[in-house]
Length: 243
Image (cartoon, rainbow, N blue to C red):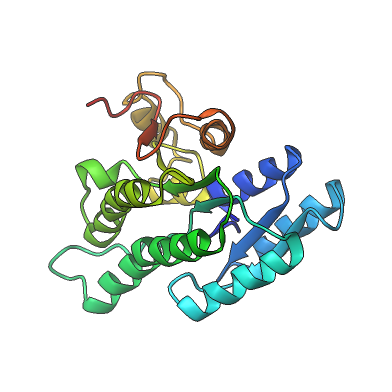
């Protein structure tokens, strides 16, 4: 199951999992058109049984429960959960209102909590994985994003708490992207302008923006090869943040 899978990193993760012969539950909430396009693309390339599409607000326990029930009815079990759902509502700290704070915290942090809890309750195997998506700004912050940065920082520590409590049956890790070339990032930082693009790339030791494929490769490593790793935060950032 990939939450927030309609676009950006989530869609690439879902599509690449299908290419690796995994069945995929595509969760979305707002971006219905993109979600349907992804669903059609996967099932056209593979079979009608490869992907299922489910609209659910990850902040609402009742909707998440129904999503898991539907997915288990279709696929019998869910072995991996990728908590990717997120939202940005940027505002200067002194101007940010309660709704803007709560909406972002609820989607990113509470959504990760609810989906992970429901996943863990239904999982009865011995090698499950929860992979959370972090953010560099969870570590160093940024202007106008107190809600988003706080939510992602919470996800990093929630990862550790879950790893302690769900071991050894379920491994829980976090993948923290750096400058990943998605539509949202390009728009936010105006990277279609050559000056802005070069400025961004010059901060990255590997001298390029990352791609959603880079994030998928780390997730796939965690799913398949990390037999003795849990509670960790993997930075996929081209060396941008070294600490």
